[in-house]
Image (cartoon, rainbow, N blue to C red; front, side):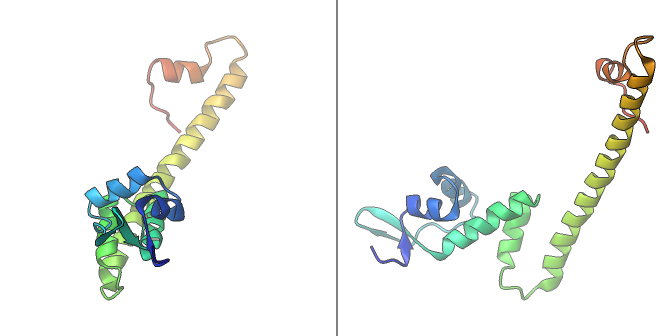
Length: 138
């Protein structure tokens, strides 16, 4: 087999994923179907390993598979405004999540402080908040 091509197993290893991930990405049209068969095995261009790593890294950064598909369609980089829009939308989501996490951090720190102050006189407010699904307030 020429070194420019991989079997699905070698592609998966080169990209750091499992075979089912490769198949899943193919079903979602994130990866093309292999162009040929050699010796009874489908063969994949080596360059697909980089594409799979891109998909996994984009997922780690919080992009949905739909957003990743959009980015892959724009991979030639010519439509920079579309790429900026997709990345900008993701940035807006990240900032909203950070605000929520900061709010939760302050609320939990406050409950921890109140729990320490109660010293057995009352039920710990952390347990109370969880038991009664009381929203965490700042």
